[in-house]
Image 1 (cartoon, rainbow, N blue to C red):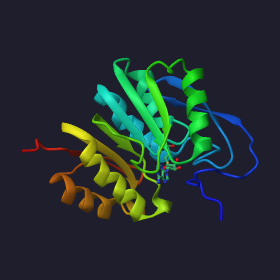
Image 2: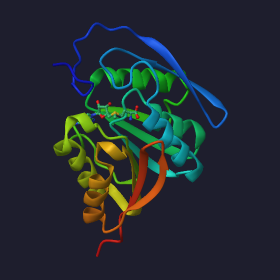
Image 3: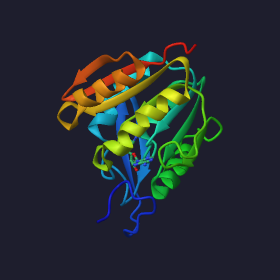
Image 4: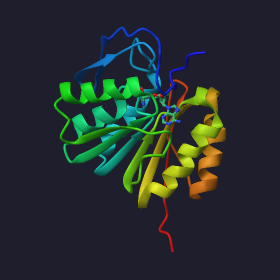
Length: 202
Ligand SMILES: C[S@@+](CC[C@H](N)C(=O)[O-])C[C@H]1O[C@@H](n2cnc3c(N)ncnc32)[C@H](O)[C@@H]1O
């Protein structure tokens, strides 16, 4: 069965444009069949951006499981001082991400790369943002949280958005067991935004 997290989707391509508004800016992105949330921007991504943008993140940021780029590219648009790496297993999503970066004039500050979880990603990063692929299962999503701890600078943070009824509380417990801390930053229409910070390592 075809999934949005296939590495090489075989469905017929049908590129289209979608738009969304956030903090008074309209952003238009290209999407296609075979990628996550192909017809409109995901509600969870929007809830996540509403929390992330006012934080004015700085430095090196990783958007893991970036899809066609909604989160990482929007952060790069709003925060001129960041460099963003966007990574996904899905080659079609990655191609769209690169195209969207070009159309938004962000190619100089963002890198799109294919990676199965952290396979091709080194770091370290100041912040890692994840809208996790719940349907891919805990083996994948929990590996994303675990690998994030290893690729953050000391004092760097992991941000995750998860629907409460798609395992938010259990993910939060797992993240806390890894990081020793977790904070619920926002509840928005059933979407929970969590933050966990890597403590100084001895
Ligand atoms: C919930 S979607 C979020 C997409 C995008 N960040 C957004 O907010 O619209 C999760 C993404 O994780 C990607 N993904 C699934 N399994 C993966 C893996 N093993 N390694 C990297 N990315 C993966 C999927 O292809 C999908 O694009």
